[in-house]
Image (cartoon, rainbow, N blue to C red; front, side, top):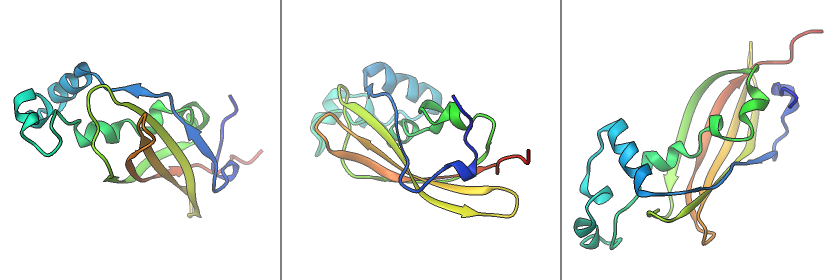
Length: 148
C-alpha cells in the first residue's frame, strides 16, 4: 500500500474497518485491562433491573473500536503519523453482547500547521440494525510529504 502524507487526504475520504461482534470475552478482557467492574457490564440480574434490561458494553470499549490502528487507514499512515492528539465521543445508543459494530472514519478537516498537518477524522460506530451507537472525532498530526 502506498503511504499517505497530509497532502494526500481530501475532506470526505472514508475508511471502513472490519466489523466486530461483541462477546462476553470482550467485556471480560476489557474489565481485566481497565479494572472497570461495574455490574452493568457483568451481572445479568443487575442488568435486567436497568433501563436497558440487560448487560451493557463499556463506553470506552466502544471508543476503542474506532482506533485508527485497527482500521485500513493504519498501514497508509505508518510512516507519516506523528501523534494522536485529541479525541471526542458521544454515545447515541447502547451496545450489548451479540451486537456487531461497524467502525468508520471520514476525513472531516485538514489544517496546515507549521511542521505537520492536523487531520480531523469523524468517527462512527453503527450496529447491525443500522443505529449509530457512537459518533465523535479524532485528531492526528500527519507529516507533510518529504521533499524529493
